[in-house]
Image 1 (tube, rainbow, N blue to C red):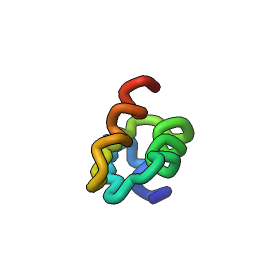
Image 2 (tube, rainbow, N blue to C red):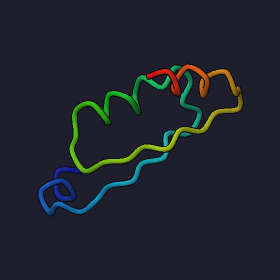
Image 3 (cartoon, one colour):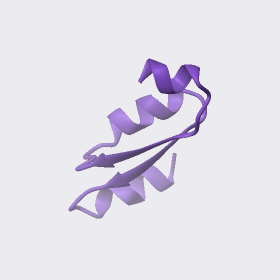
Length: 52
């Protein structure tokens, strides 16, 4: 991961079975030039993430 970050490439991450979304949100809050897509079998997580 550090190699990608140091090369300044945009990083796209898929957080599968994201649950509360805490891992994907932590990545977004701590890394630059990163986008995270969330996927889960329960739709309720997406309503929570839209509010953030």
